[in-house]
Image (cartoon, rainbow, N blue to C red; front, side, top):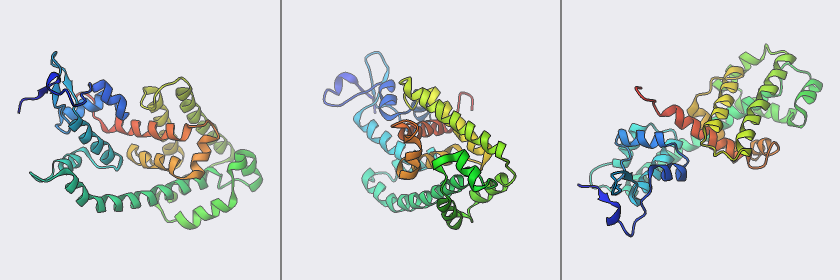
Length: 271
């Protein structure tokens, strides 16, 4: 089938790769990669020969973005969207819905467990109550810490974090706090500069935050960081932590973490 040209699609929307990247919060590099592997190939061309995205392409990309955020690998997404020959996309997605919802519930529980583990450890296991109050202020709540241990003490993330933090001194916890604040400052700087969450600066701030958690608490992959960041806007307690720093920061951090995870998932030239 010969790709349609822009002048034959008077009633359809056609967008350039840059416009699509901006609309969906992706990088141009990611879209080019999707094209190279056959996951999403633009269906139209301009008179100059540049590839353009049609309404049908944009609909497919919406599904790609959703499945990527659910943690599906690109190969599986392609299989899901292509499905069996002659199968309507909506019918195929309906068959997948039960599995997706089950996975969402499972990942939400896991993310909550990780967050509770982090929340507990950030409050200083080896500090006295007075030291905890001095260091973390209003963020410390002994009842929350007890609840976290009772609910999530059996998770791998909790056990790994516990093993690391039991040796931390007050000076260590002061470093943890200072580095955490530096991560937030990097997000705020990018946000106040008017940079989108998909900018290099915002993604670098997200990577800094991921490395901070990995260094001090538990191993955090980019994809797991994606699910962790979803809780920053889903759970009011965590949202408030970021909103107290700067209004709108929780959603900005979430979007930057997603963009950084996409950056890690997209192989570079020669990979």
